[in-house]
Image (cartoon, rainbow, N blue to C red; front, side, top):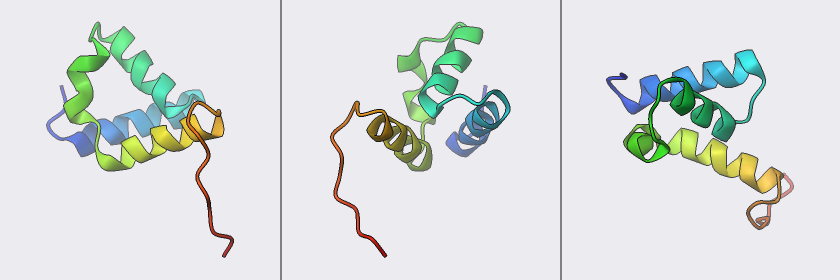
Length: 71
């Protein structure tokens, strides 16, 4: 198990990078491989990982688009 949410986030980012998965798919794959329910790891998802999952969901149109500023 991971000591901190940052350790878990780094592990998930490694899965995303190595297996070319979305962040949510990587989290679900981790849960499946380790026989863990997704509800049991909610405390390990930090703000950075949550933002990346949200961004993936917006790109896939699962969440409504937000206005962005062109800078």
